Length: 129
Ligand SMILES: Cc1cc2nc3c(=O)[nH]c(=O)nc-3n(C[C@H](O)[C@H](O)[C@H](O)COP(=O)(O)O)c2cc1C
Image 1 (cartoon, rainbow, N blue to C red):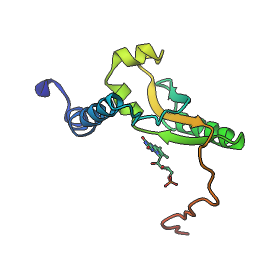
Image 2: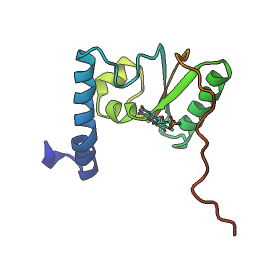
Image 3: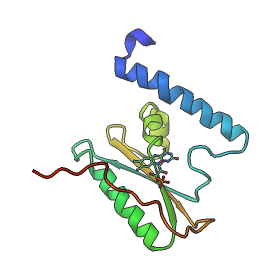
Image 4: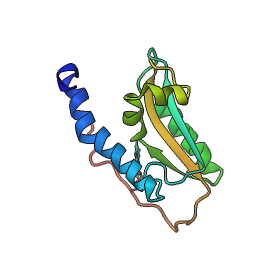
């Protein structure tokens, strides 16, 4: 198929989509949900092709904050979009219009563990002009 595909399409398919899909399938056979960690809820955010590319990420972030405020644990999953991107069948299955821009998935559920404190993070650099 290589002669028919664009370079970025071919390279991302070859280096990520294909091996990652195979890993997810292999792990599933062993009873492990490597993609969504057996989360009871998974929400996928996508937008019209006319929307700003960041819109779905903003919506997902608000959903994450709302879920955390309700005491749920959450995790954004970026690896779903590249898998969906190449599958018309999966998009149809999950009622995602083919032309839509794909964003992130947000998984949530009641946490098994509660942490005493979170990892403290800082911006790598801030510059003022
Ligand atoms: C946009 C985005 C996409 C992510 N995609 C994935 C993913 O596909 N799989 C995964 O296990 N974690 C994913 N994460 C979670 C990160 O790996 C990481 O766990 C999270 O940012 C919290 O970091 P910390 O656990 O080190 O505090 C994603 C996070 C973000 C912000």
